[in-house]
Length: 390
Ligand code: EPS
Image 1 (cartoon, rainbow, N blue to C red):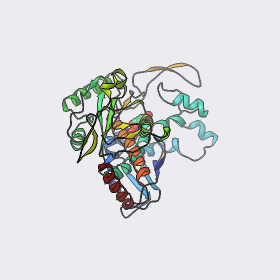
Image 2: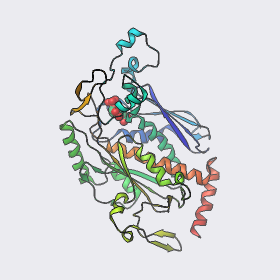
Image 3: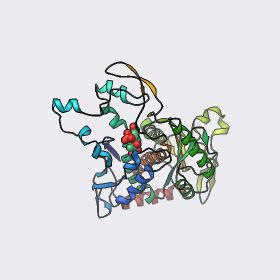
Image 4: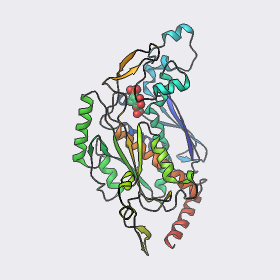
């Protein structure tokens, strides 16, 4: 599967075209809206989220509730567009109109793509950069992830993104017995954290950052269960699925680090403390005693739950001013803004879930075929049987 997104934060809409989805997959707009809604929630979001009510429109690739095998086109309207039509329109402007364009940006915000993107693409109005670098784009990545999740669900693969840390507040360990429980507990939390006590502390940390005109980051984790042995491959660097997942997660706006399983902690431990011992039983076949490697060995899934973590830096759009330099006047100024999210970590957990779901579903279809659900199902059943009897 592959997808391409297009759209600006304050343009008319965001679009994603997905290619390679098998035919006969049940898919409705509601399946996608569910995840768009989850992404919009979360303690610490700013006023923009009160303007938008993200709803998808399917315009291609689905007929009477089922995919046809053709490219799927999904669109999400920006409600804010009505305030931006003159500023963001595609029509050429007259010279007079050009001088009147409002909200021209010549003052780069530290930590954003503004300055580097403007130098690279030679824009004097940095709006041409920030409109596309905005995390608004993650809306349609979540839409693509929702389609991936529909495929995974058909084959018993369940996935959940949740928040482990916000600032220095952290939840200890992942104390849940099933992914259904993890989902229920995180959905009930305003910060998408499964521990209610820690959730309250996280909210206080967000409040404190907000009161100080600051922003706050955190760490999210995605867990996927029911993943078969052997997705990805050890034979070539670009087929290693953990590496592909790392790219998917690292490309989420504001993400600065990715871990698989215990990740960086593995570097501080000895080999005997890291590697998961192999066990065997007749009914379950081969398994591992522990899952410190997060479901991956040799770039392939090993049948254990997939565990991926991502670190999100605090959003760089701050009320608290940071020093910068105007690109026209070259004068030093203090960058500050009109509206922002003080924390988007809970939303980022949903985006991270979508990114991991996408990579898992893509690798799944590479292994089992991608034309029609029925053929894939037969192939999967056959494979499961062979794995059991290995
Ligand atoms: C964002 C800035 C804010 C966020 C936005 C991402 O938007 P605005 O500039 O319109 O206030 O709300 O996030 C979303 C719109 C979203 O859907 O997540 C940025 O600069 O990245």
